[in-house]
Length: 71
Ligand SMILES: [Zn+2]
Image 1: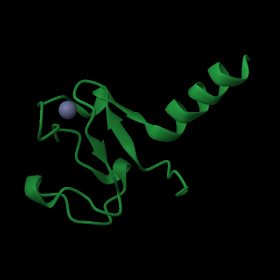
Image 2: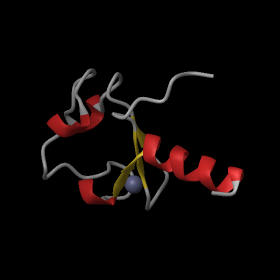
Image 3: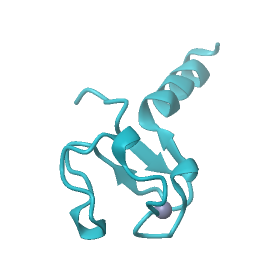
């Protein structure tokens, strides 16, 4: 399984994943742009959600592990 990077974030509205290593060239974000460096006015290209609607995949996986392990 690939390592989950903190920079990978999930749009909680539409499920799109932003990967820092890929960026989002179609919306003006070059590959390699860390999530923190993505401009605050950037919106999800699929559903228009704000940056605040995105959640770190690492946190989501940590929560999922807690649920699965019963803690
Ligand atoms: Zn979205």
